[in-house]
View 1 (cartoon, rainbow, N blue to C red):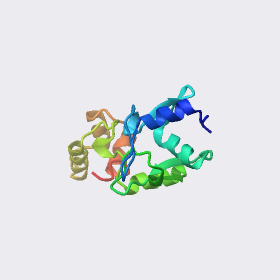
View 2 (view 1 turned 90 degrees about the vertical axis):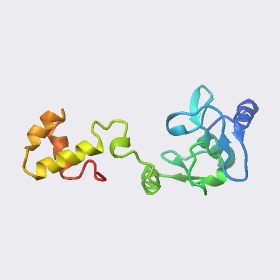
View 3 (view 1 turned 180 degrees about the vertical axis):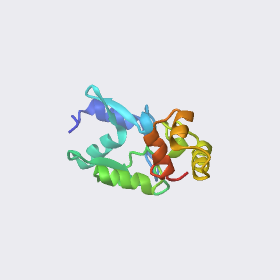
View 4 (view 1 turned 45 degrees about the horizontal axis):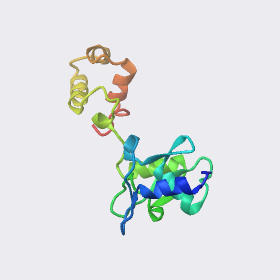
Length: 156
């Protein structure tokens, strides 16, 4: 539970732009564009602060999730656009809204979509072995098999 002293609360509201829809955080943002604020020596998500100011403590293990009518905005702190959910709820919500970074959009991707398609085409035409593909693309044999079986790069 956050300590709700008037200085922290005033600092929070000075960084919120209220409008009829989303209330946008105008302060600093972190990973994914989510607002964040230093509170009692730690950086806390602005949407989490808003939840606690309006609804009270966030139970252990729950996330504060967005459901903005015009499309989720990670800067939104409008308590009417926030809800509590489990990690499973968060993952399902992310996937349903298409926010997951898959394929080449994933920051850790080592291949392009064109390379994935070339790997599959070459293997299925019998031109090259999975081991040769692993060597050529500097990847593990396990990862090449995951690509070939569509357990990696499922949308490619």
